[in-house]
Length: 466
Ligand SMILES: Cc1ncc(COP(=O)(O)O)c(C=O)c1O
Image (tube, rainbow, N blue to C red):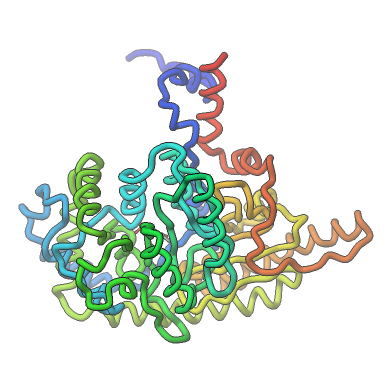
């Protein structure tokens, strides 16, 4: 037997490969949620961090029946890049439930909604191209936009979603420089991470703006079916194309996912897009993974063929609605110094703390108390969001949610007390959804807490220059 090599330091290992990395890797950022998952799988940690649906609610007997029913040879075979017919039809049915008429042929099945974001960015973005997103935006989209070296401009939101006046001003300012965004990325309904929903009036204005200025909009809608109160609002996709004809759909790229209505483990999402763009996106998918898992797609097709899928979504809605109320009550009890949003659906609440509290540092303290959240900076490409955090309320049980918020409340109270003692002033509450100014040290601080590969890439660059 050969002798075991002594372990090398991570820095040494990196140096060996540094000269090989593509320049774009220096822009790559780690997904804060993925990093946190390594910590939050520990049973003693109460995680309010991930966006995990509660998969324990899925009936194991149904799961066993469905998997036993899959056609073995076909399920184990490659499939078409566009996706299996049965899945595309199921997707058309899901979209119809949100008043969007699409033909199954217009649907591209993707490996989760995450891949839809990746494919759109891959097809449209050259280094330096502008993407407009909300402030804050989906933390999982930030690493994608960074990997393709996009220039991400984030537009403030309030309780009615993206501020369209600010968007117009930004578009004007860009136009004055001879620039235009390649696309606008928005999660209009129960936004991740802010939990707010764009009003109907703003949706109409955004669609009109897209038409007027010929701008593509990527509408990401994983949570639309998870409404706990209020009236359903038309999607941008249905506002642009009221008759359902794809010929009218010139500017909206729409993405959805099975992750929040069935299971994230199946990794089945989808997109629809204006036809010429769809053709490019299919090419992009072929180079990425040929096709999404046929095995998983057969499971999804079998699930939708087995009966009505809506009662399960109703049952999820009931569970999450209760947990949303639990977390709102717990916040009111334990975080007097904070402000937060009031989501009418979805899985997230965005909490804004006094400006002097940095949530990246706070996370280290929180993890020592066995509770986790996503620090606000993960939702910005520009280092803002340092005094905010995203809390998820779908995956922890009610008592754990209460206890997790209590622990966060205790460590926030320590910070408030420290600040008041040191400055002799009383702290004021920050308004909800104020993104704050960028902290130049923010990226490094986050890297220190979460061991991000981004540091590795920076080190790689440095040593290449040296
Ligand atoms: C806004 C948003 N988009 C896309 C995704 C990706 O989900 P998936 O790849 O599981 O479909 C998520 C997951 O949390 C999300 O919140």
